[in-house]
Structures are given as C-alpha cells and as structure tokens.
Length: 322
Image (cartoon, rainbow, N blue to C red; front, side, top):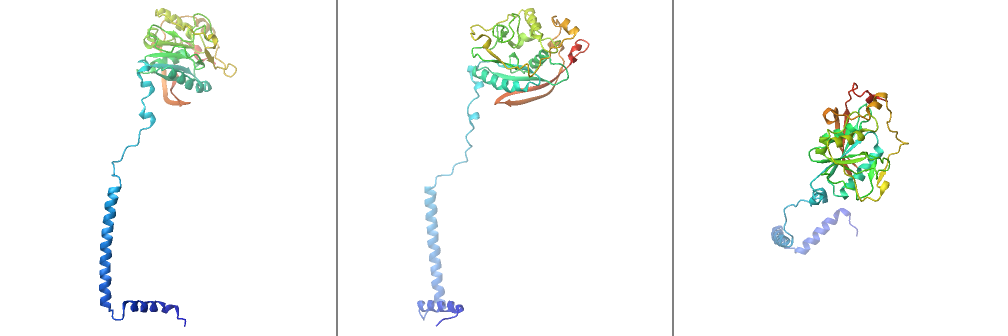
C-alpha cells in the first residue's frame, strides 16, 4: 500500500520509538541525550587540547619579521668608492649645442671608457640655450665654475671625439696640462701648437690661466689663444707617448654634411681672432644657469646645465652674426 509523501516522517518516528523500546519515556530520553551531549563535549575538548599541544610542538616558532635582503646595488659598495680608483675626480666638461645624435653616443661611451680605467668622473654637458653664436670657450669656463668641489681636475672634451686606445691617460695631470688629443694622434688637426679636442688640466692650473677667452664666438681659434695662456702662465704641456695607433687613436663622429660649422668672420672679428686676450676669461665671464638636469643616457649618468651666455656687443659685436 502506498502512503502519501507527507506521512513518511511519521512512520520514521514510529520506527525510532520501537528501537528505544515501548517503556521509554520522554524524561528518560532527555537524560540520555544530556549524557551523550556532555560526553561529546568532553571528548571534543580533550581532542582539541591534544591537537593544539602537538601543533605547538611541531610548528616552528614564530620569528620577528625580517627585513628583505638589500638589493645588489645596496649590498655592494660602488666601484667608484674603491680605493684603487684613486683620490682624484675628473669633471668631463662638454660644450654643447643641438648635437644630440652625437651626445647619445658620447655619454655612454665615455662613461664606460673612464670606468674601465677606474677614473672617478662626472660628465657635465654645458648646453648653450641663448640666441648668441656658439662660444666653446665660455661654455668651458661655465663648466669649470659649475663643476663643484667634489672634482679637482677637468677635461675640456669635444662631444664628437671618442678615444679608441685604452692606453690613453686620463689620470690626474699633476705636473702640468696633458693634451690627450695631441697633433700626432688627432684625425684632423696636426699643427704643433694645437691644444684642442681633449685637454686635461687641474683646476688650479685653469685658474692660473684665468680660464679661456670669451671673445671667440663661432667656430675655432679659442684653443689657439689658450695655448698662449698656458705659455704665459709658465705651465709645461705634456702629451701622450708610446701610442702606436696614430690617426686611428680617436673616432671623429662629426658629420660636416649633416651639421655645418659656424665659420663666418666679419672684418672686426678677423682682426681680433689672432690676438691674445690679456684680461678676459673667468674674470669677465657673463652667464646664467637656466636649469640643471640629472639625466641617464644609455645607462650612463650625466648632468646637463642649460646656460645663457652674456655678450657685450660693444666689445664683440660678432656674437650676433647669423
């Protein structure tokens, strides 16, 4: 016989009553349930206590939170702090205007070259941002004054000239100015009085010369005048020896077809370009630093100093030519 689905719980209850026996009362059932509940609670408490004890014994002790290990750059001292690099620091002064494609090559190349030779250094790009003609000498004067007290010698360095021979010396020129790009090695300029391209000298020696003349606007002649200043200050000029690579010692990356040099000369400028400037230099330099930016080019750090030069047009009217 089939029963309606709603009566199934009733049949289940009757089967339970038969299991407990007919004489079982509600009171006895309550007592049994209470005892079972107490036993269950006691067993549960003992079981949890045992688990907690064993877990405390098996689990490793909690330790104070440890700091993460330092990164490799912090864990290792900078190579430039190694005593084997020597006590002196070089300021590589790069007079600059608009030749960015050359700067992108120069900065990482020179940083790697000097680091390989363990020369402490920083690269200062003196960027002329005014409306006057390019003035290499004045920009080098600015670099000297802005190089900071952490450097004690400087390199007057063209941005388009890269040293290829590791034997070239960029060390501290204690005895006198050291012309790295000497006439017998430079790929373009070979006359004996040439001191351009790359010239190293201490800050003390640069001050003895009163820096470079500020009269040379446009390309050329400022280094020839500086040669006379070195002689006047009675400083002995040194050049590399034992270099066998000749005119292949340097890579000249300037492309004259792409960027023309400002070689224009007016009549007054032609008369003045071969004269010695007895008073001008650091003493009458006029400039303003517009901004200073720390940048990284190809992984190599450098400082770009955006500079506005001043020009006394009564003295050098050719600063506005072109």
